[in-house]
Length: 271
Image (cartoon, rainbow, N blue to C red; front, side, top):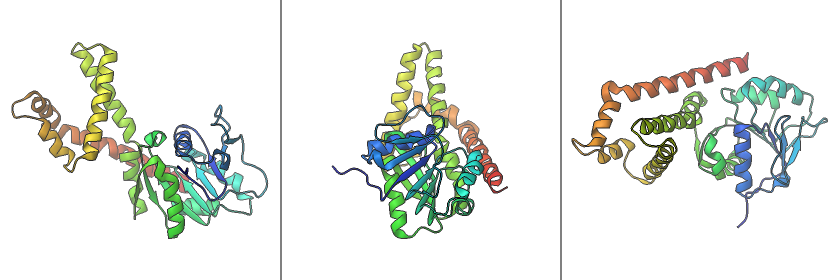
């Protein structure tokens, strides 16, 4: 089977949690590791064949594709390092939360800029990535999609203002779900189960339920009601979650807090 191909050199600037997850996803998808250059002063190593640099190369050298995966607060430093270069990438993909395409285009002068919001499961090919671009033509959008597709579900959005919501829902969502799994396991332990067994049961339950929801033509709300027989134990538990809309209120507040922070990061990047 032919692996994922790229048009030319690909620079991954930052290979921490998310950048590293993307790198592992690309390698698993069969991309030629010799086409990838990772620029990161902190990580210990990279997969075989990938070039690791501790700083941005001097001179005017630019890659065909550059992926920005540093923290949004580091944008100014990276921008200054590239400011003196006369060239520009053909395609810039940025996963910097809250940093808008106008800011990115002004900083790096790429022919096309695509903003991407992936989440951590991209490392196992089960991620969610939202994409947006103002200036990429269809061919370049196809190149961006091909690079992100092996990492999981792709959703193009038409309004950049929706990125705060996307980031809060799918970008931050794994963190919220991990917390839920932990709480579910703790609740099982409180009922007398050994802690390690409760954790295994909670993880497998969330995994299987997620796969079922993904394959079902029915909504998660309908599926929940199908599990819950009238007067049964599931219904009794759902009554607690549904009381006064407590769970929905909690999640609305959780996502709203994340979305507000995304907006603050965008404002900081513009300033």
